[in-house]
Image (cartoon, rainbow, N blue to C red; front, side, top):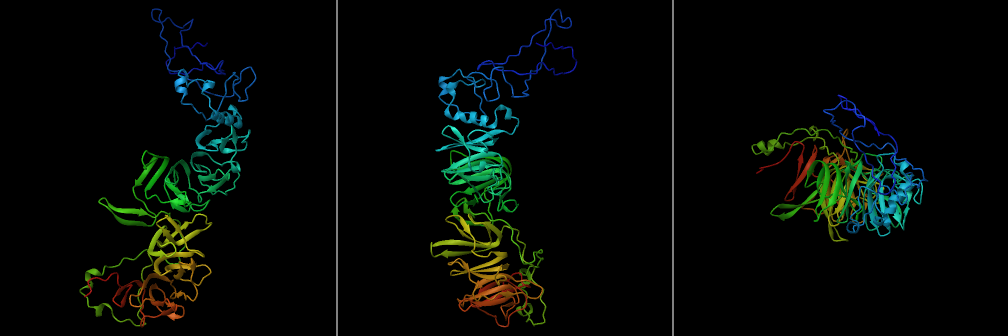
Length: 586
């Protein structure tokens, strides 16, 4: 009992009591009574007093309170029949009908307890009782039910009991807690989804507690229930994962991240601002086709195939793509749009200059008024042509060339793209560079086997099972400069007898065009910036015989650089650096 004077002109907070409040029974309720003092100050108004109080506040200063009897092992008051749990409660729905008198603000009777409520009791005991509840970040965030037991994730650490040493995730099987492999995870678990025996876990961790994955988890991991082992999803993401969803054999991931990492402890990867999709069948990140930017906190399925994503959305779009989209005839609403299922990312080194493209004067407006004899004056060896502008910068990921190839083994048409990008094939320790072979049926992409291209690909041509690749690049350990041949049927480089292109003094090789002659089926026309092919003087444009693997000059050759090649009947017309386009030629 405490007297508080109200003869105070200012607002004031008065401490009435500081000490333990111990429950005396399972139905204990704290009661606070506000009343007039037996000896009030002042005279009031005609013997009447007005009592005014704004609020009564209870502040928990410590959960470590014990009553005089022996403790119950939980660090709290020892009340017969009272058990304390942490973070987990299973409520039987049948109790709402049979126990209508149960007040959720008080202690629950034993009749409402289920076998799984032991999870909360066991976790609190393993943490060290209520004396361990000294951090506001402690909590259980997510559960997942498997046929073998229940998985619980959150922010906690167990120092005793059957799962002692576990961090942030634990299993409950046969009435007891069970530790997971490697002691669990080294960061908080926010969400989990189960796909058969594969448990996908998202949160703020980067590794297992033991460090077994060497930092490869990156906020999301897969735990194999049968094998009791952890697997990374490539290198994860570069931020916190807050929510996971499961739909159409795909794991949907939301959180506060901006990239899908290609390797741990690095910032390289594919842009994915707050939303990403992992394809379980292919074991790779999948491009869902949408575009979303923001700090996302939730993903879930509705009653239809539509998924709901929530959070701090900065921007969104119905369609998004990583370097390539496929358009097909659609309905009255427009064409059907299919993005590249796999994600392209990263940067690769380039051997060519990346300076800004110089401005050109359009030729179409005056070309029809000029005589061709004035326009195409005969060149002499002493004529100095200004070089073509450096190749257009291609910030990764960039697709700069594409072609189609029919795989005779599977009879499926494949899409081959080249450019400035990299991607990781599931199960491969290294990334594939600059060229991807994409199967639209499976939405899987794979790279070229063997040494990878070091540079940028700008031209592709398929001739049977032969893939000719041009650009500005080299290949480690091979005599290759801007042009190379790959055997698609054998999945290997075909370098036997292939003579490399050579640059002019002070420049580098850039192949901009590879085309097949319309009059000679075994002849390819290669154009770009180079001085010779092997030992053959062959500047800017040269023909290649695919049967004999020999280079040949075209007439007396030209002086300059070739941007592209077009065919008119049996005549090939090179477009050199002085011509931006050809129109209205009669």
